Length: 423
Image (cartoon, rainbow, N blue to C red; front, side, top):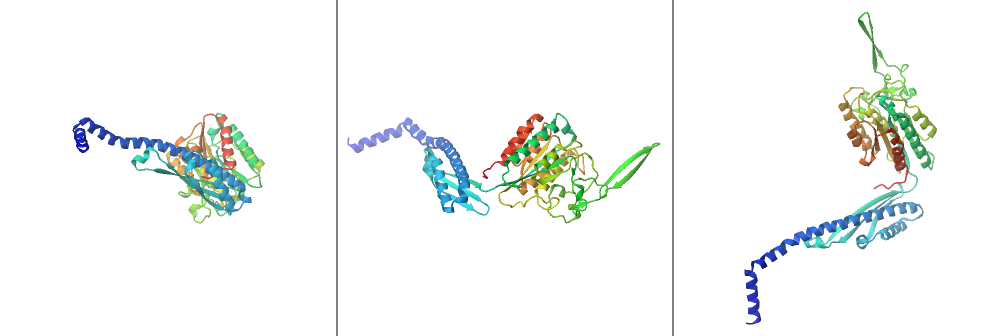
């Protein structure tokens, strides 16, 4: 039998052998399995490469910000590529060529984008020969400026469990950290916004066009079984500084210009006569500490008014004028919103759920404007509401004892005051 005949015989034998058929079928079936297993391995490699690339870009961005003022754009770009290359290793180093760098010398920002390709191993069996990893980072140089609003619950429940005493200590400590972080005059400004169901401002605002005097107070007396009620309107001469919620929907907005009657702020009788007044933005640390130490716990809870007036201190235009425009280069605006209770009363209702809805909208207004919102729940309060109010889950804090407030405020203060990357 010749060679050709022998081959034909063996092929006929293989075709008739069921075990051989099974083996071939099994081999074909294993291809996608091996490919998928390889994908798991390759994606793990990609995740590691991405972490390495992220760290390399962050490091290069910070180094570039340090030297940008004394180097040309060409020199900065060249150094960025060298810094990134020096910090890459493994798969990341093999697939990197260069970075795309945008330098804005007006805003003093450096934005870096880079990508790299890593060759796959077993994943190529299912048609993917490589994977592309992308990352970006941004840094600033020069002096960053900070505006921070402390919207602090001053309701009656803050008088329990040592909460108000601990809050004063923590807030004062925060002021010291911000003071120590300041390198230029007015680089960091802070406002203090004590709130209950209302807020209180200086009576020196009584002639401002954005205030309206139309609220009333009804008092009733009973004599010989007969009740007599008297309604008294608020006036500029009787007003002691308290302000209630604006008409809806303006109660959850912060209007820089006041035009329609419904946008005006209603001057009102004080539901809590000892409520501490708002301290607008200032870099006078002694004034800020005095404002904090003057806080007194009294009254019911309206978180909405605290959030919206915290924002008001950070917004240029009425009712306050100390804030810089939002678009100011290298300016960051923050708000710390702290409460220990659930919403119980505003100008319109005692329905907590209805007030919660207004608080949610007020927080969204602040975040939409670009304010980074931290929230702190002190022992009690609506956890879900405050978590959603924060700009990021990592910016929500919860303390189970008043003693924990100082370390929480210290951590927030250091986050705010340090030079940070903007990713």
